[in-house]
Image (cartoon, rainbow, N blue to C red; front, side, top):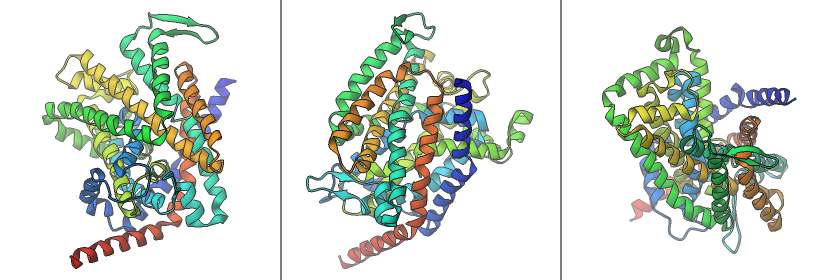
Amino acid sequence: MWEKFNEILVAIDDFVWGPPLMVLIMVGGILLTVRLGLLQIRKLPLALKWMVKNEEGGVGEVSSFAALCTALSATIGTGNIVGVATAICAGGPGALFWMVLAAFFGMATKYAEGLLAVKYRVVGEDGHSLGGPFYYIEKGMGKNWKWLAKVFAFFGVCAGLLGIGTFTQVNGISSAVKGFFDPDGKANVDIPLLGEYSWAVVIASIVLTVVVALVLIGGIKRISSVSQVIVPFMAIIYVIFALILIIGNITEVPDAIVTIVKSAFNPKAVLGGAAGTWIVAMQKGVARGIFSNEAGLGSAPIAAAAAQTKEPVRQGLVSMTGTFIDTIIICTMTGLSIVITGAHLQPGLEGVNVTSYAFQNGLPFPSEFSAFVLMLCLVFFAFTTILGWDYYSERCLEYLSGGHKNTVKVFRWLYILAVFIGPFMTVSAVWTIADIFNGMMAIPNMIALFALSGVVAKETKEFFKRKKEEKTAE
């Protein structure tokens, strides 16, 4: 029965995340890139400057940087470590090329999402902000499209509670902790009704639940304050170690880049008869890239709507840096580390073990220390994703329930419960369900971005025209 159920889920997942959705997201990014005149290149220095410089006199709940960190807390996750490895193993090194290309166009998509989130958000007298795809669908496209906004919000709640927000991340944390502290599964305990589990998993479950509960009960301000500390810290630590690996093997980098580019268009020339087609490389790279940086899914604009700003364009630029940091920097470093060390060619390795092999064999440190660093990064990455997705799903539920606070409070405790039982969920279907919910969020969001691309282009043109006139007047 379970096997049949899994087969059905995999079929649905393959359909949802098939070529049509990926083409929809890629074409949306290309359309916005053209309409905005390669804004992601022209305005990237300004975006990086505004990323750390908060706007004075802005309206909202948290600073622009805090809103970005909240969004990054959800996007910088297991996809940066596990997703890249999975893509390269399935599609060859060329998958990294397509991942970066998708992220380039995804920067324009993320810019549009951030801009629209602030333009159409609702800010209460108490400073409480609510915005995201559900509001830019309803207010931007018109009330006749409110049903589409509700579809997005419904799948947003499901993705948080039953998918990417809880079970998948908690499973990632418990697996990483067990893999480091109890790899042979010798320190076990028999739990009534659940079965036998490693003490490492049980302790990780309890500690994680308590810490998550303490943060979530404090709401967006506590989530953003924690994210402001953890996100830059974990990203910098990971980037430093990846840089040490790349610099330590700098003579291998040119060959690795050539391999990646060649494999993107002709995998057989690089990997021989065992390789798939370039279409497989593109499919895996684009899919994992979107899963990692979430450009087009509609999740990040929910956090962007809380930013203290009065300029939608400014927040759009700040949001755009999220995709740049997540994929073009962090995922590229992971991919280079894997290709340089040949980790993807090792038989029997998959997922996190591929990246772990790269770190253990590419870093000039004892293998146990390198494995510990990677485990620590995975734990932090997954932990902050749990926090970010709680915020996303709570805001979706707030929209669905018409702002009913008790409903949101009950949901928060259900979310904490899901975090507690997550490590004991061994059904592989959980990962497939997470993928399906993410895809179902993307469809209404991308429809809205196509419909409102003219609004995005107009707002952008008027903003920079106004800024130019102000500068001339000075």
